[in-house]
Figure 1 (cartoon, rainbow, N blue to C red):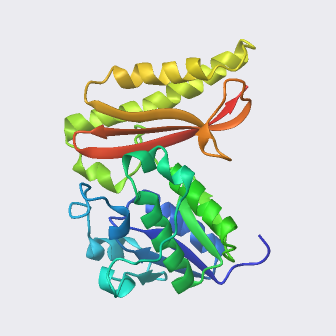
Figure 2 (cartoon, helix red, strand yellow; figure 1 turned 135 degrees about the horizontal axis):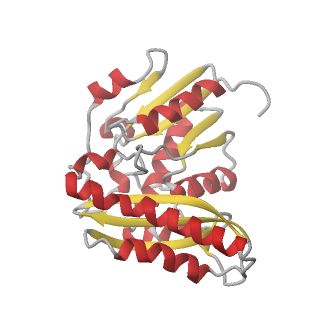
Length: 270
């Protein structure tokens, strides 16, 4: 990246945790001015989803943020003064798979508000977390497809000491559910171990062996309601073919109790 951009944007829905603060730290290293947006976007929640339940704590968020960042915290009326917008960004086929299949319209709503934030803040770089891998893929593609004049920077997932990915929704887990939720990161570790064993044994790439290793972990925990576990090509966000070699991403989504959790990990298929 040539030079230091004037403004870096960190889009969030609030309920900030260490994962968000890692994005802010990265933004501060890239720009002289950092804007953190805090907005729970109604467009990306379906009729039966947790919009009203989604955690909101603006006072606590402001206390967590460094004093030298600019906070943009509009309400829905300010961003959508005429109500739900008629003009929206569509996520296309890739937005209808995985999270998009489970949450129809979610990614259209996400991309629409992100596009609005890009136009309002006019950043030179925007910072996203790798935990939401499909979101990152779709934002990058929107920036390329629509010629937004900014760069996207992706920060690795921040985890708890036991491996659980940091998430604003983790606060909804009780003690037993919190233990069950660790199956997601353990499944990803099992997938990475399977890849390592295949490589050490000079075995042919076998996505089914990798998937089976992860699914064994997930199916062993009754409290996990698995939505999907898949290995995707990060350049297409589609399941890898049987003869695939190269970089890949293992993605998983599940409900623990009533809380939906996501996680992912990079793989290198030998």
